[in-house]
Image (cartoon, rainbow, N blue to C red; front, side):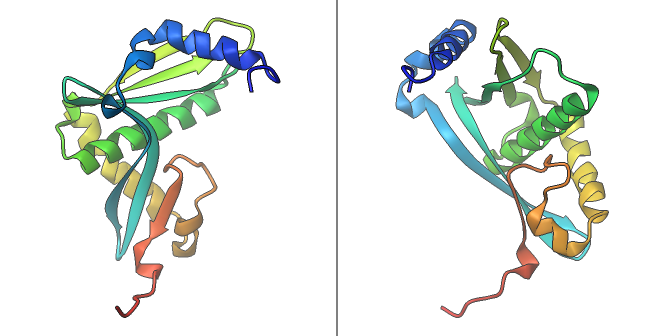
Length: 172
């Protein structure tokens, strides 16, 4: 892979420079593509918010880690969408893990083709955590019920949103 795209080696080196200990962690302390979910009642419908993220456990506290290739200049629309996606990730992981909001954080590693990489550490707190469910409900409440299971508009509610009430019961 590196032979066909030498830029990948550069990006790995950039990530290593930003978080050197990431490459030294034992498998028990690093979970790649962790799936977290949380049920949320939106009116008469229950939806399941699911996220996929990488998780490092540091002193038993989860640190979510995201990395990706980003452009040097990001317009305001992209910044808002990223902030909303981060908010959903932190809220969902915190709820799934049943931990106090202050004990979780998100590190975003942005590597760039021709510029130095950037690291952004996002802390979470009780106020943000308490505001997020109502914010999500307000967004989901504006959508027609049928659109909730295939959310492609703003893509801020994670990778998947399932309308639990739309799933037929199966006899066991």
